[in-house]
Amino acid sequence: MPSPLTELAAGVPPRIRFGSSSWTYPGWAGLVYQTRYPATGASVPMLGEYARFPLFRTAGIDSSFYRPPDAATLEAYAAQLPDNFPCVSKVWDRITVHTFAKGPQAGTANPDFLNAALFREAVYDVYAEHFAGHTGPFVFEFQTIARRSGVSADRFSDLLDGFLGALPRPAQYAVEIRNAEYLTPAYFAVLREHDVSHVFNSWTRMPPIGEQLDHADAITAPFVVCRALLPPGVSNDAVAGLLEPYDAIRQPQPDVRSDLVRLARLAIDRDLYAFVLINNRLEGSAPLTIIALAEALAAVR
View 1 (cartoon, rainbow, N blue to C red):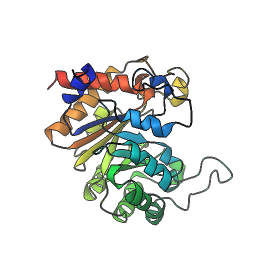
View 2 (view 1 turned 120 degrees about the horizontal axis):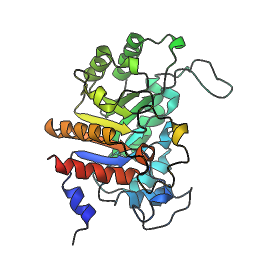
View 3 (view 1 turned 30 degrees about the vertical axis):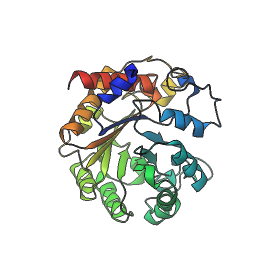
């Protein structure tokens, strides 16, 4: 007999791919994992169990933001995943950081900012050879670019246009920004020109996902990427340590949930794939948030 979660998952349209931002959370034991894992060193077997959770249809590979995964890592991940299980990978920040914030280079411009050749060599080619069957959208996350950098909204759109035009194809790409002032018609036009998705993100200093959806022509590609990371106005520091071990909903976010259901419904109506990634720090437990979203989605069908 199917479990309640399996039955709930069966009611989620196939094009809606729920998943979490990373998966290495031992606190999910009894919820996602039947095995009790150590705090570190078990990401590969954890991914195998993660992919068997009925409501997970994608995974966010977040560690790739700090260092591109090597061939052995990607092959190990691929061996754990079933067919038709694409992952959303954050791209190495060496390509998206405009000005270094830490270390001996702090305050200096990054010479590899928007370096398409480096992306191909360090990221794309490795994925194409060792993870092709599970490569979903690549997310270029641009952390807040300071006003003193001189990168205005128009300048950012121009730079982005040249960069996206130089990327290798075929692949799915998505852009996540942390500067609300960059949400301009020119920005969305650039994404649309290159069939790249805007990442609808719930984050400290970004407008709510619903407001991002309200921008004219905000859907810019045949797929949608959404990352619900933090409630608007809430910082990582404010919740650090308060939500662990991520096994319960501790700070419900009904407005964010409503926006996420709206986005999913929009994707269904337009026959788009939607990659909807939830962070534990949104409400306290990404799997439980996704269960709630699946229930809410079923209620409005």
